[in-house]
Image 1 (cartoon, rainbow, N blue to C red):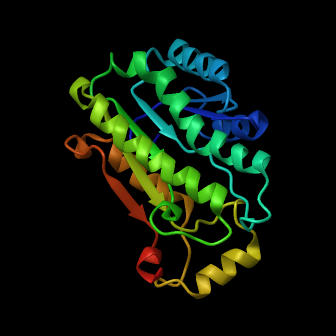
Image 2 (cartoon, rainbow, N blue to C red):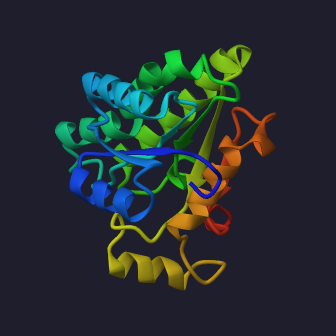
Length: 219
């Protein structure tokens, strides 16, 4: 919002998103209920956004789920659940937003990938494979949509201080981090803000790693 965007924040946890929108600027922030695995809810979310703000110029696919399990213990249901949120969700979002992105000048899509799609982590078969798939989807979409003036890029966060990681995991990762800490949400937000801005108008299909050097330590 500091860069002049009106923002529709979409989540299943509508109450939390609404509180955040109200704390910012209700005139420029909109809370929208959305289960990213539902094509119907995506259509409704996009329609609600366009009705409120008059257009849709940017899509940021940021929903994600993570769980850990050895290959021998992973369940088909949990594996599929990760794929539905982490890869199917962005696919459905792009499809739903595409008619409006085609009408916008400087339209942009940013997918939140992961360093788990740069190097493999053990016990992350569901998460890692779904993020590798999202990496591929980003590349395909960038190639398909470039001629229509729609840029598609991805950010690759390392560990970030969010509820996805418990306190013990955050402390362990920070202790071994090159920069002495894990990422903050604003670190990722700033990267996304750059990719959707006019400063990145000649960038598409890119993979912006925001991990404090974590990927340099892997392998």
